[in-house]
Amino acid sequence: MPGPKDLDPSTSPRALLGAELRHARENAGLSQRELGEPLFVSASFIGQLEAGTRRMQPDVARRIDEILGTNGFFERNCLAANKSRYPDHFAEAAEAEAVATTIREYAPLLIPGLLQTETYARAVFRAYQPTATEAVIDELVEARLERARLLDDPTTPMLWTVLDEAVLRRRVGSAAVMGEALRHIEALARRNRVIVQVMPFHAGAHTAMEGALKLMEFTDAPSLAYLQALGSGQLDDDPATVTRHKLTYELVTAGALSPRESLALIASVAEDYAHEDQQP
Image (cartoon, rainbow, N blue to C red; front, side):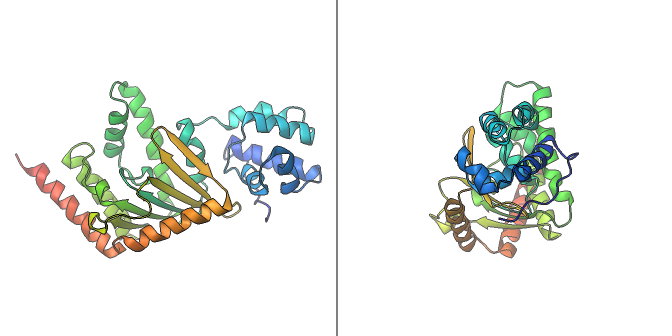
């Protein structure tokens, strides 16, 4: 596979670690495949470590030090590189998301994090942690909004989201919170920053009913699929598995309302929430 582009070590500890791994591997005269073999990982996994899209775990770092003769450098530094504001089951996916060029996502229950407003995110986290202090909730919301700043860039990443109709109908917070959240999505779609479709209830059974799906593509690393469940998540780079999940997503988009129809439904439901909020 093509080598990853030069990384700016100032961007993150993981970028530095990835750049150092590539440098050490090339100095040892090893290909990504040759380094991966004794680690029982694929060449693409090594490429993702070097590109900063995957976490280097301590046991892998220890073996890399042994293979490349780097005197414990990677083991010492991987813990710092892995520090994250996100839960362990999502941290790697969030960090990959930050460098993805394309993100495709099916959301069955909640507005995805990149599309959430502050009030919606706050209601979500309060539901998740009903006894948490306001300081804890504030920190979680801040991290969520920081993720959403990816969309401040006018073109990258390309974000294509399919929302189940349940996402629109399930009230998170008040009617005012929901109305604001849906108008935010509508605004992003109307200015062509995101592509949004809705999987309507009347579509019936479909291929992604078992849960949420996120697909990410990168300039210099293989695609990843992320599947999330209650308090857990799985990031997968196996080409056959990712290809299967891509087909799942394509079938979801084929069964969903068109972007124009979806936008009309989102606007209509937002208006319903607005009317409800105005009632005494």
